[in-house]
Length: 46
Image 1 (cartoon, rainbow, N blue to C red):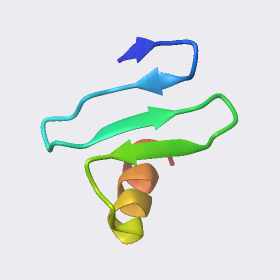
Image 2: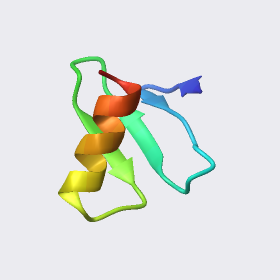
Image 3: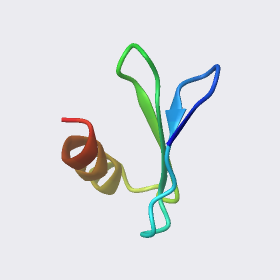
């Protein structure tokens, strides 16, 4: 995981690339399905 100016980014082996911002928002690259994105966010962020 690296800390950039926009937030934290991690590349998972599952093919998704989450970017979590300091205020808790996130962008999950690799899916256009909101359900998958919410599930990944809940699993890794809380």
